[in-house]
Image 1 (cartoon, rainbow, N blue to C red):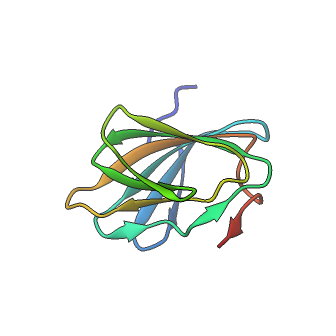
Image 2: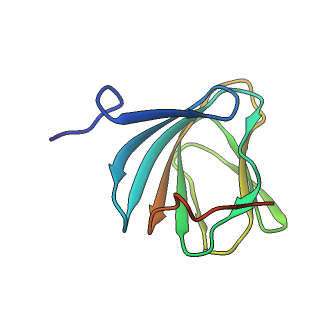
Length: 112
C-alpha cells in the first residue's frame, strides 16, 4: 500500500513539530518531519543507531559532534552511532526533512 502524509502514522514533538512514520520496522525507520521556525530538537546521541537526515525544504542548522553545518534542500548528513547531534530551524520558513535510521532509533536515545 502506498504511504503518504495523509495515511502515515503521525505524531507531534517539541514545540509544534510533526513527524510521519513512512516506514516503521525494527531494522529500518523512515520518518518525514516538519519543524516550524525557531524550533530545535534536543541534543542527543544513539547507542546503536546510525541516521541520515535529508532536507526536503527549508534550511537546517545541524550540529554534529563539535561542528555546525547549514543544510539546504537536497542535501544530507550522516550521523554515525554514538555521535552527539541536533537539528535546528533558525530560519523563517518551515523545515521539512527525512530522517532514516538503521536500526530504528526509538528507545535508543540519550539526551545530553
